Every structure is written in C-alpha cells, then in structure tokens.
Length: 434
Image 1 (spheres, rainbow, N blue to C red):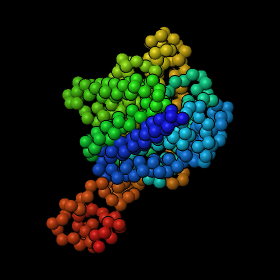
Image 2 (image 1 turned 90 degrees about the vertical axis):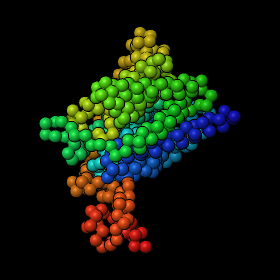
Image 3 (image 1 turned 60 degrees about the horizontal axis):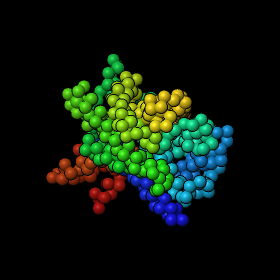
Image 4 (image 1 turned 180 degrees about the vertical axis):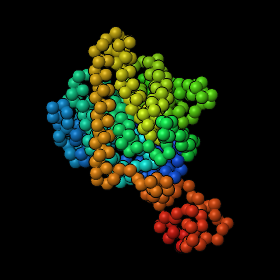
C-alpha cells in the first residue's frame, strides 16, 4: 500500500511536468514565428490542452489501451479509461493522466509545422483527430502489450517512435498539403528566411521543455522505486547537452556564427532521440546519440527546405527525423541486444520495421487530416488573413500592445484604425470606450 501511495505521487507529479511542457511549446513557437502570429500559436496550445485532452480521455485512450483486436486497435474503455486494469501498483487515474500528457504533446509537434497559415477551425479538428485516432493507433501497436509491434519485441521506452516520429511525419505531410507561407520560397527553389520574433522567448520555451523531459522519460517507469530512474534522467540530460553542443559547434563552423535557433533545436533533437532508448543504453551511448541527432537536425532542416516544405519551427527535423533515428539507435546501442554493443541483429531489424511503419502511418495520417479539414471547415487561411496575421484575423488582439506607441496622440475611436493602420478588436474597443 505504501508503494501505491509513492507511485501515485510520482506519476501525478510527472504527469503535471509533462503537461507543463505545453507552456514550453507555446513559448518556443511564439518566439520562432513572426510577431503577428504569436497569439495564434499560443491559442493552438490551449486547444491541445482542452479539446485534445478531452478527445483522448473520451475515445483515444480506449483505442490505445482498450481490449485488443488483431493486434491493431483497442475496442473498449471509451468514456471510462479508469476501468483499465494495471499490472503495477498505481491508480488507473494517474496512468490515464500521464498518458494524456503524451497525447497532447503529439498534437503540439504538428502545431509548429503548420504555423502562420492554417485555419484555426482546421487546427481544432486536427487536434481532435490526432488524439482520437492518429496517435492512439500507433501507440496501440507499440505500447499495448497485445499490439503487433510490441509482440515482435519493438523497444520504444518513452516514445521516439510512438509520439515524436508519428507527430513529426504527420506534421511533414500536413505542411506539404498546406503549402508554404507567402514569399517563403522563390521560383528558383531558394528559401527566404523569416526572422523569428523573439529568440529569448523561444529559449525559455526550450528550457521548459528540457525540464519536462525528465518526467517525460523517467516518468515512463510509472514506478518511483524503479532502479532505472537515475540512469534514465542522466541519459536524458547528456543527450540534450550533446545535441545542443553538436548543433552549436557545427553552425559556428559552417556559418561562422553560433545559430541560436539551431542550437535550441539541437538540444530538442537530442532529447527526442534519447526518448526511445533512455532506459536501455549507456551514458556514453546517450552522448553519441545526442551528438548525432544535433547534426541530423541541421541537415534535415536543409532537406525539408529543399523539398519546399515550409516548417517555421523545424518540427519535422527535430521530431520526425530524430524520432526515427532514436528508434534505430535502440537497435544499435541497447546494452542487451544492440548491434554495436552485442553484435545481435534481431532487435535492429524490429526497430527498422517499427520506424518505417510509424513514418508511413504519420504521412498517411497527416494526409487524411488535411483532406478532412479541406472538405469540412477549410484548411488554409485566405491571403488577406495571412497578410494581416492570424492574431488579429482569428483572435482580435496582438501579442504586443502597439497602442502604447500612440499614447501621446489624441485618440478618436472613429478614425483610429484608419490613422494608425492598427485594427482594434471589438472587445478592446469596448474597453477603450469605457
């Protein structure tokens, strides 16, 4: 009974830290997009935590952990996830809450890749679909003990494949369907750089994500007494540090300047890559995995640009490509069955299959969601909405209050917008009138 209490506290705390990572996603994306779209990306994170969380609780959890059908899909626990039977000393509600954090994180991966030109209604629908079917289905294959990949022996401790690769390649597919932002690519294929609005803000988001990642990985033990807690935590730290270091030094060598956004993404790439193997590899392997991922994220970003896929925050390179690499890295560096550590081939073959499956599923799922949005609520914003910025188009308020620039001028609400070129949301007009 005492272990039950300790595990409850541990998993609930870990779940809270994983859910707090949404604050990191919000700040990261708000800092990397242009100022006129910062409110919109923040609102999308609220959609993840509201619509997405409810959709997963109601349907997604049952598809993921419900009674198995042919190793493909769960068919029970809909609307009653707390009825799941666990083989560990932990209340089912704590387990459901922790898994909810994972589902919400998967949506947020897509959020950044489609930023600045996706309809808000389409994003709400997308968040629901990811939590109802896209993430839960691949999660069932990998993490449900009856799932077909789980039966083959695939290892993905905390979700490099089940969360990051699926989310990353769904993001790739949706960004491809959506098309690039206006002016992003030239006719000769070259890309124009849109400067981030606030690098310190993005950095703060990365720090929060890094903090939450300790719970993301170590919390997946679901057991406060598990002897792997400390090794998982140190591997998480080392991989993130190595990923950031590799990206920092490579950009310094390649461009003559240490690129802040690429260093941020290098850290995140290292964290993504170690997520699958954090409980299975040594500390030296964690450093190597992180360092390689920090290089992968640079060249994967260039590849995504070459394919003319517009990803404002680098989500595809960070989560998609490094989710796949992290999955394969388990097959290479696992201390018990890794190809490079023991010479065994059995695990790497399963990991290759699993990585290929989640990439294909992510692309198919992303295409499916794009078509559903296109046929129902509309997928892409209008050109005028994109020009104005989604903050004002969809939410009626800017991220930074530009009215302060005109405090020394007489304010006439009837010609203010015409005089200054700044739109005032109806709610703000009422406040100014008062």
